[in-house]
Length: 88
Image 1 (cartoon, rainbow, N blue to C red):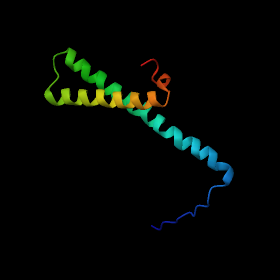
Image 2 (cartoon, rainbow, N blue to C red):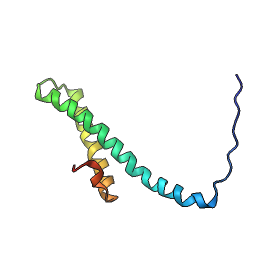
Image 3 (spheres, rainbow, N blue to C red):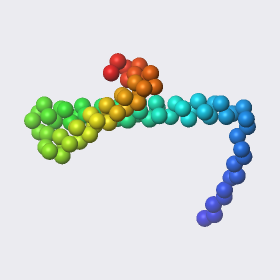
Image 4 (cartoon, one colour):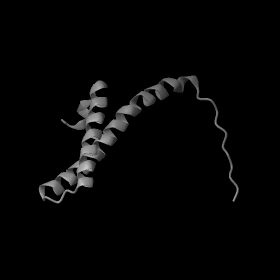
């Protein structure tokens, strides 16, 4: 099997502002993804806690999920985009 490399050209100058906007938005997109994923995990673990089936490892995982949610929320707050969490 042979591999071919497609050469890339420099971006046109007109594309640079759009690329800059995308680059600036990436931390916000990443924070929303981290928050939403951690929130689902935290809800699953909270259900175990309510059923009195939460072991030590699950408790650590729940604390970690809550830390991830707090960090992501802080990132979004500093970007002025808490609205992306749907009222969180």
